[in-house]
Image (cartoon, rainbow, N blue to C red; front, side, top):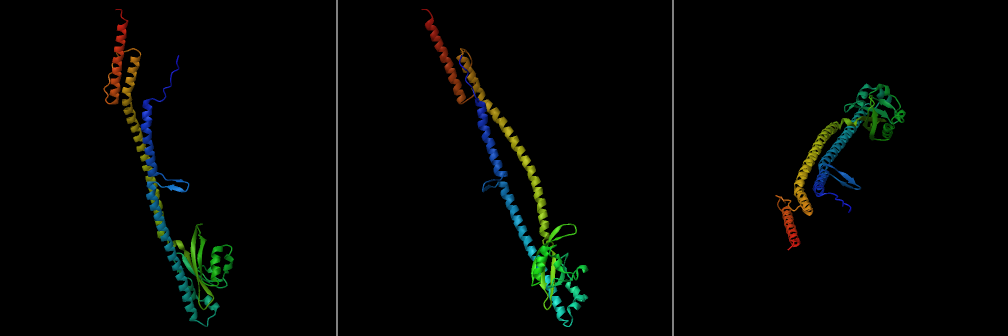
Length: 318
């Protein structure tokens, strides 16, 4: 007995795969183009969504960075101006009293009021001499102390202060608050003409860029809100895409069945005819190629009937 041939995939599965897979592929490509960015080695593909959000974010960050830098420079200028103003006031005070000695100036309360002034919200000015001895400070306990002792504890601070012993100096150093938070300070040191005194003006630089930091915090909040909204939209997009694919699959399936059903029927009719059932009706209402196939089977059925009748007549005795 001959071995049955494998049928493999039928016409219906092939139609479903051939129609549905391209649609899924199109959905996938569209979602990638709209929502996803990826890197391929040195080449970066940016999605349509990220083209807008990344550009706006980058523009916002650059603007904030420039604004912060400008405000920091303004703060540096204010601190420098304060140090130079106090140094000029002290120089005027000292020139007006040529007979007084350094020891007298150190004890002078009026000069102390000039030497220690407020800088910004929390900063202040202080005065030391070119040997590193502090003489005027907002903290009375530091008056008369040798600032060299801070070289190991505050190396960045001491580096700036050491430069001031030979001329004007400036720079940043980190300062630890009582709550343990470390914040950067900017300090400018200006010599007092006609004396060995040096005025140091210092305060937290973030006092001047506070508006930018407020905007940064606001942007962080907005980005977080945008991210939450984006995630909700993404879930909705996936739901709509999944529902659309399911509906399309059902439509394609039932449409494919409506196309395949008459072909299967004609296949059964042809099979019956081949088995000798020549009275099987070929009842097809379809049009087009399927109707043409049905008519061909009807003609075949009629031809087989006629051939059998002729054969039977030949066998009849005369």
